[in-house]
Length: 233
Ligand SMILES: *Cc1c(COP(=O)(O)O)cnc(C)c1O
Image 1 (cartoon, rainbow, N blue to C red):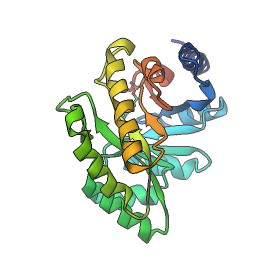
Image 2: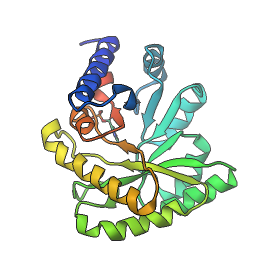
Image 3: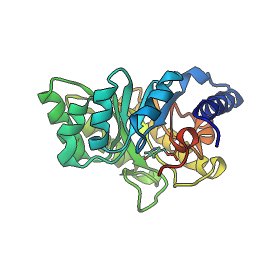
Image 4: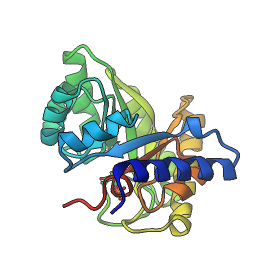
């Protein structure tokens, strides 16, 4: 078993290498350490090594961690039920990656306004077409014009700031297999950005098995769990 120090060094080197291959600045890619299921001492060890951004997928679990380490940047990456929108706003995530419906957007907007906050969000898109995946249905480019219309209803809501798009490739997919999925998300982002007149600069794509392919396709934020912390129990 290699140590967290070694794993982190390897992941950082692989991010840098993947960026260099396509002439991108590695500094433009955020490493989000996915700390779901891992206890605070593990998070503290990663923070000690210079990791500043952490991803959680359950609001109940995140709340305690955020209270213990308010100095770190916490991201919500898991599915959010509309009835938990107020909890998500109250938790104080710097970015919610998983905005996947207009209903959830309306709830988050209302809670953010009540809290006097602006919540940064990403639109989670299902570009792989897997039935089990959350996200706006986006695997067929023919639906994109209608989808971008729906996005415009989200971007019009007060209290939310839409910063970009997020996707997940199927679990266990390697870099090469996942690449066309990441290409599709980037193209959708480009079209949406054009039509909506918004930068949508953040592309949250790539996990332990496929972050190199995601970087080749323009990812600005990779969500890495197992490659840093090992298998989840
Ligand atoms: C768990 C999770 C990850 C991290 O996956 P690993 O394979 O452990 O790197 C990334 N994104 C989301 C949305 C997740 O739920």
